[in-house]
Structure formats: structure tokens, C-alpha cells
Image (cartoon, rainbow, N blue to C red; front, side, top):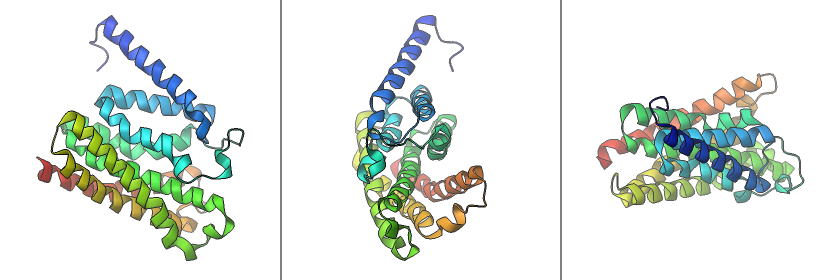
Length: 237
């Protein structure tokens, strides 16, 4: 995409990339991201903008801005440890980026419903993890339903609002119908993803399993449960 662009346009891309990096750094205060993770988040934001456009930034931006605020824990404090690295960032965004490239290859912007659902699922997983950090009792599988609901409900709602905003701006389809379908798809993905972590984390995140495999397992859950969002295509076309 970039090779045939004129130097002035490439300079604009550089300006956007630098602007997104500065913005990510300025907004880092309320996150648990290390320096490498902030760079990774800015890189993902630039690629998302370059491939899809500004409206596709809404879903990952909501995750970046809200995951540490919807489920606040002491690790959200400004001077707290920042344990999450660039690998955590790529794990969270991997399925969403895959749907973005699918939309680009197929020239089908309405894939944004499945895309937002994937980010809802990833956000719900983060919510369940942070609920477990809040108090020791929340780690128990006996409160899996509560953790699933508290993690999934706001995740699906905010991503559905993001789709509503995106389609209001672009008019690819009726924004209210798309928002409703995004809410349904996001709720399915968020609940399934949150349940997987809340109830089956001892399997998905088992200590003897390499960290990369744990991330792949989480991404597989999100990919499988966000795919029904593609059913919105014939309904919105």
C-alpha cells in the first residue's frame, strides 16, 4: 500500500504514526503497559488506521482506554508495576487485526461487526483477569458466573456503541441495526471468552503450558466466538 504513495502522503503517514505514539504515551497513565507495550499499541493503532481508516481505531482505542478503568484494581495506580509487555498487546489485538485484514482483502467493511465482537471478547477476558486481581475470592471457579457477567456486559456494550458510532460516520449500513447486531455478536463473544477464562483458566492458563500457547488458546476462543459476527453481513447488505 505504501510503495506507490507520493512523498507528501508518506510524510502524512509518518505524522499520524508519531501522533498515535505520542497519544499512546500520554494516555499510558491509567494502564498497566510497559514501554514496549505502549510502542506495540501505537504500532497496532497505526497499522489499523493505514489499512482500514480512522473508524477502525474505535474498537482498539476503547480497549486501551477502558480496560483499566472499567475494572479498577490497585495496579492501575500511576506508580504501580507495569507487568504487561508488547506480547500481551499483540495477544489481545491479534484476532481483531485478522478481521481487519479480512475486511481489507474482501473489500467488505461490514466485517467490522465481527471485528468489534473480537475486541469485546478480548476486553472481557481482561476484565475477568482484573477481577481476580481485586480480591482473592474472585479467583475461585465458584464465582465464574459473576465474573463472566461483570466482565462481559460492559465489554459488549461499549463495543456495540463503537460500531454505532463508526457506521453513523460512514453510513456503510443502517447504524442502529448494525449496533444491535454488534451488541448481539459482542455479547456472545464476550460471554464465551469471559466464561472460558473465569471457569477454565486452570486449563487455558495452566502453569505447565508455555506462555505463547496460553495466548494462542485465548485468541482461538475469541476467534471462534467472534466469527458469528459475520452473519451480520447478509442482514446489513
